Structures are given as structure tokens and as C-alpha cells.
Length: 422
Ligand code: UD1
Image 1 (tube, rainbow, N blue to C red):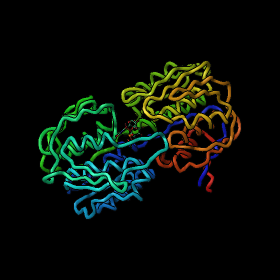
Image 2: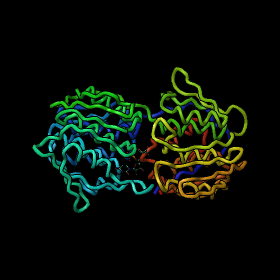
Image 3: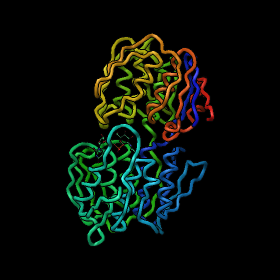
Image 4: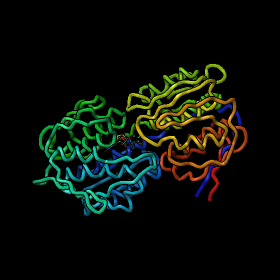
């Protein structure tokens, strides 16, 4: 398994191009299952999670061609031969459950393995299933699989009220509703930019959707959807991660393709910590306002709140801030696995349940550390950039699920980062 070696060496400056959003692409790709015409996605990120979704769709009989070095994905589902998403692929990635809604909507039946995914809490899929049940699906859970059928071969429009916000359940229900008979109203829907991006793509395919980006989405089902070409929205989590580079190390970094609307609550916290963020004509420019950053309190929430997917990286910053910060994780239980690793680097962190108290230290010290999940792994790299000496982050396969060419992007700003093949 590969490791990443980071040598902390002071201020970093340069420009970093931000890729298309992994989480948007992972829901746009299964949208191909809704139509027999081609779907072309541009600005796709080059990540192992995207390759996993490619494999999953291909296992169903979809054609997925990766063009222009992976930046363009040409998908077609004109000859789906298999309606079973197998455990062997689904277990690698929780987002695999997103094939369920579209397959059921278009074919009237589907069998999908229950997913595994990151080790960040229980992460059930009950809300996905309840939404589809409300739309008339008969669901049978046996042998680790969901066996789903739409009576009469077609889902029906319904009012679905989510008890709490779920990004994935909103996406699954939204896709399923596009081909259901009648109108579906999703209440307490997720408002993430990736949902808006999915709705925009579905509309290009002919779907009738209103209210995306608000907590109530209305979908009027149509009989068929066509093809489309769609550009994947910028990855706000990759954006936020690289915005932290000058915040944690000093220097000035311009994140190309970044826009403030994607990271408003995150940028507000950076501002409060003493980091300036300005929109330029090609992205977001970030630098510290003065010397050391100040402590700030952070609570994760659904969009437009502070994203849980930036919590680990923000913790890395706050480890060296002046004062005591309190981080509250409200979306996932058990999402502080990076804390003990940061402590190996000299950070002072007390974790109690979903709350972490971080007392800033002047300097972190390099150490061998282990990545436990995707966002944790990049938080350890950020900490390594700010630390004295060498940090070796092992088990970086998590990193490759969500960050393309990390070493290259950081090296372009003057960082000493190397991959050690293992
Ligand atoms: C998506 C993102 C992930 C991000 C998360 C929250 C993708 C591929 N992944 O994950 O990176 O961290 O949103 O912003 O887009 N829950 C249930 N039952 C369900 C569904 C969810 O209890 O049926 C719970 C989860 O365990 C979690 C919370 O709801 O505690 C929110 O999860 P959700 O928004 O569904 O996250 P994902 O869509 O899995």
C-alpha cells in the first residue's frame, strides 16, 4: 500500500486547479440508467471512486468510456442486461446505492446489495428505501440485498418527507421520481450544490423539476428521458481542502475554478480565524491576514452549513491556531478518527462523543501516521505540511478515492510531497 511522505517547509504559494466534484459525478453517472440515449459528463474527476462507479455501471451492461485522460465520461445505457448490483462492487463504495432509484424507475425492478463504505459510523440506507416505498416500490431485504419491484412496472409520484436531511436519499428519490407516474414532492430535501447539479443535468435530459437548492423539490414524472451533455460542478470539498494550504502554512494560493457560493460557511470560518478569501476572475485567492490563525468554533451541518467533509481538514488547521477551538460533528458519529493521529504529531485534542476540543500548539511535529478515511487522510497531509520534520501518511488508498494528483498539485506550490510505493 502506498504512503505519502511530507516534509514541512514553510509558506506555500501558487495556483491549484480544482477538479469536478466527486460526489456530483457519483450521482450523475447513475443518471445514465434513466435513459437509452447517451449521457456525456465533462470535467469529471480522475478518482478511484469514479472507476468503481464505472465498473458497477458496466456490470449492469452500461457502456462507459473514459475519454480525454478521464476528464470526459461517455455513458450509455441502451442495452442494460443485468439488474443486479453485486456485493463485490457495491461493498467498495456506499454511493453504489444510487443505482437503485434509477434502475427501479426505468425497468420496474432492481436488486442492489446493501453498501459498506467508509468507517465513519453506521450510515444506513433506510431513508433511501422509505422514499422508494412511498413511491410504491415493494422492497424485500434478504441475503444482504434489496430486492425492489415497482408494481405494474412503474413507480408513482408521492409526497416524501425526510425525517432529517440526507444527500444520497434525496438524490436517489429525485432520480426515481423523474420517471414516476405523477408528481413527487420531496420535503426536507438536501440542498447541496451536488443536488442542484444533478437536477440541472436531469432537466437537460427532459425531466421536470422545480425547487432544487431549496428544501422542497417538486418533480413531475415524464414517460422517458433523453440524452445530455453536462459539465460536473467544481468540487467544493477539494476546493476547501486546498484553501487550507496557505491558511495552515502561510503563503498565498489561488484555487482555480473555485467560487465563494460553494464554500460560504467555510470561508466565513476562515475569515473569523484570520484568513482572507477573495474571489478573482479565475478562482479564490487565499492567504493569512496576519501571523498565526485564531481559534474558532465549528459545527458541521447540511449545506449551506459547514460541511462534515471539511471537518478533519479544519481540525488540522485549528491544531496550530492561537486558543481553544470546539468542533462539533453533527452529521456522522465516529468521525474523529483523525484526532489520535494528529495527536501523534503533537496536537492537543480532547474528544467526547461528537465534540472535539482543540487547544492550539505553536508547531506540530512530523510523525508516521495512518489514514483512516478519505478526509482524514488529507487532513494528515495538511498537518504534515505545517509540521517540523517528516510525516509519513500510510494507507493512502483512501486518498486516491477522492483527491486526484495531490502530490502534483501541492508540489506546484513548493511543497515537498512524495508518494512512496508500497
Ligand atoms: C454524502 C456524501 C458524503 C458526505 C455526506 C454528508 C456522496 C457520495 N457522499 O454521503 O461525502 O459526507 O453526504 O454531507 O455524496 N442516514 C441515515 N439513513 C439513510 C441515509 C443517511 O440514517 O438512509 C444518515 C447517515 O448515517 C448520516 C446522515 O444521515 O448520519 C447524513 O448522511 P447522507 O447525507 O445520506 O450522506 P451520504 O449521502 O451517504
